[in-house]
Length: 187
Image (cartoon, rainbow, N blue to C red; front, top):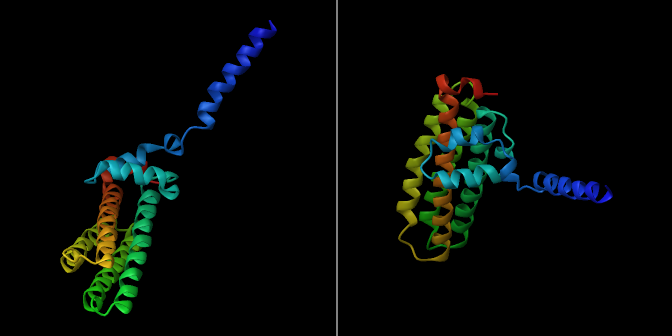
C-alpha cells in the first residue's frame, strides 16, 4: 500500500508540475490575441509578440489588448525617434535625412497617441490614425533604405519593426471597432 500511495504522489506531482512550469505563452488566454492576429499580415509575429509581451498577454478584453498594443507601438516609436534625432546631431552627412526621419516619427507618435485617446469612444477613428502612419513609414524607407552606413541600417531595422507593430496596432484597433461579432469580448 505504501508503494501505491508513493507512486500516486509522484504521478500527481508530475502532472501538477506540467501546469505550474508551463511556459507563459501556454497560459495566455488566446481568445483576444487570436481576434487581433486574424486581422494582421504576419500572424506568426503577432502571436509571438502578443503572447510574450506581459501587458498584451494579460489583456482581459479587446479594448485593453488594443491599448497595450498601441502602447507598445508608442514605446518603439519614441525610441526610434530618439535614435534618429541623436544620429542627426552626431553625423553631419546624415543630418538632413535623419531630421526628416525624426519628423516622420514625430508624426507617427502623434497619430498613435491620438489613436490611444480615441480608442474607447471612436475605435474606427483610432484605426484610421494608426493606418495613416504607414505613409510616414514609407517616407522613412525612401530616405534611408539605400544607404549603406551603420546608422541607416539600424534605422531601417527599427523602421521595419515599427511597420510590424503598426500592423498589430491596426489589427487591434480594428478588432475593437468590429461592433457586431466582438461586442461580447470587450472589457
